Length: 108
Image (cartoon, rainbow, N blue to C red):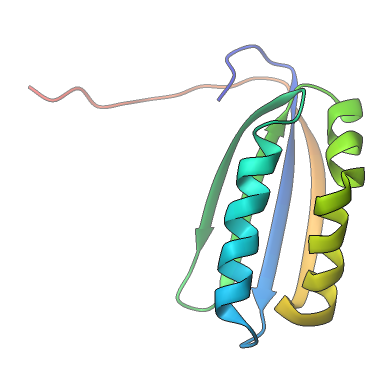
């Protein structure tokens, strides 16, 4: 992701409600776009399984950058909507990435 460890990963796991799928999709896309504009943002990876479990990991240069993102006004509104409407449950973990290794198979 960064190849410049250490950096931080914010791991957000969630179970969605069945409510307002279109509104959720629009807001999720906007949050990804907005996060990418924040100082200290390094990237994002996201997946949702057939069982409804979603995992989004965003990467940041510092805890200060994470705090600024958490407190960003539009993001705060989305957080409130998530609690009110879109999530049955969620958890958030912040981890320091000390090392990173990658592999990519080269096509012959």
